[in-house]
Image 1 (cartoon, rainbow, N blue to C red):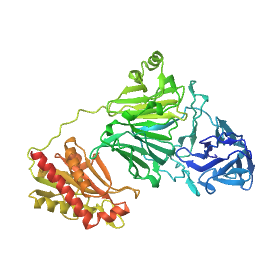
Image 2 (spheres, one colour; image 1 turned 135 degrees about the vertical axis):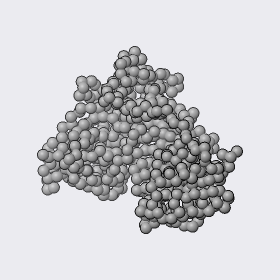
Image 3 (tube, rainbow, N blue to C red; image 1 turned 90 degrees about the vertical axis):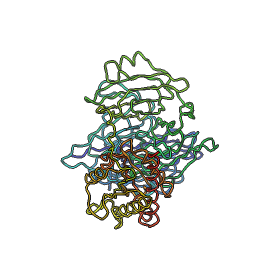
Image 4 (cartoon, helix red, strand yellow; image 1 turned 60 degrees about the vertical axis):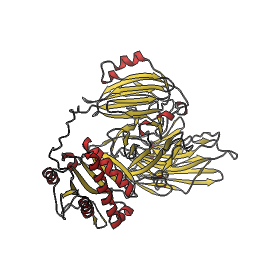
Length: 633
């Protein structure tokens, strides 16, 4: 049976006309493939006073293909091409067909057996959709903009702003795997559509497509702009923006937001930008490729806790700004009112709430350990009685909305720390969906059991890996060798200062994690320090991290990390609360230090150098000494 297939092409800006000898042409910027939802779209730059033009496609044979022309338009850069594998589409080409008049032509080549007579062009408020099969509108479609349980999904290629041939692999499920449900993404706002939902209800201005197909869901966002704006930072991109929960780090104090399934333009990675050009603050921002498909936005500020994320109505940009400097009037150009609310129970632990508004909404999301708060900056009214009636006797019965002068509306819901929140936004920005999955209620935290017999001035050092456990390996360099070398150096410095030191391994031997814990228990030291070298799939990540798990270990982590960053010129990746086995099960203050990235070419060369190893050892030893002195006071 022929695999279900359809193609959606959206134009992010209006396609303009009518063509005329004196009319300024539109600029066709790029041909893009967003494999999060198999969307192919052409990005245009609006010409002044342009009007929407009608498009029609024509069929060609040998090979089986169709084409359509964009009148009065010029292609920026060279011709562009997407080549598909394992798909009914074989190729899409975008080229300057003629220059007088200016015409850009799009040609789509299909499998020979594909019936192009089924292809139709749809127009939705300036957005042009090419469909190859009937699109059953079954559910309202939302894009995820916030997810506390986000995953980094694999993707085949990045083709945003492509100026060259790109090969796109469309995955196929194995015969034993159930077909995925792929929701086809329509990137731009559909202003006035009202679509019937399968449950008989109508949600204003929301569109979705729910198909069963063999395409795999992949999510992606391409960041190509980071700018200081009004005391904050504005992140711009192409695709679908989504963030994880914001958190803060110490030493130095900074606010952090991760963007999963995101790729950062190399030209803007890790560049420090001052956020207050007038010198009124010393806040700075950096954005980097934290993992191969995860970006990390970091603002260094004494008031990091004041920063909040503001999501644009089209989910194409994010404003991260100190809330004291936020002017809500700068965010929106229209007023929105709450229109309807709908509640649905998904399963015994998961419930969703849809809020539908009369206009697109600019919002901020703030999550604490015991609550979820949405700030709806341009919402001015809601019918409280209708809302109470809708939410009564549901999971969301304690959901509240309240007017905030000069801000808009705050929507709040009490949550447990273990609950998982996800927030989706409709493609037109006029509806918000809250999905809450109830977690297991946490037991009261156990008090730290620190051995009273711990010997003052005694340190256990743990060289990571060893023997048959090589740890990270790059270019013939083994993590286990670096960690043992640094550990021996730390031990030597500490012994010269009169400290008693015990090593979990002194040679290249294999030691289990539990044996390391048992060794520490037997030695009964004042502190435990495990030394490692980091690694990642991508070559870009670099820098030092310090991990702790128990709260009574945090001060040790802060002191040692501070010395490392003073001594070594590399990226400060901060402190992390991590459940590594040795620092979780050790009953004294314990930390794990990641001294750098073996996967980074430049840092790998530094890590094996005598200078870097000695500086690392010196910093760790001095941090241990300072911590022990502080504890003895």
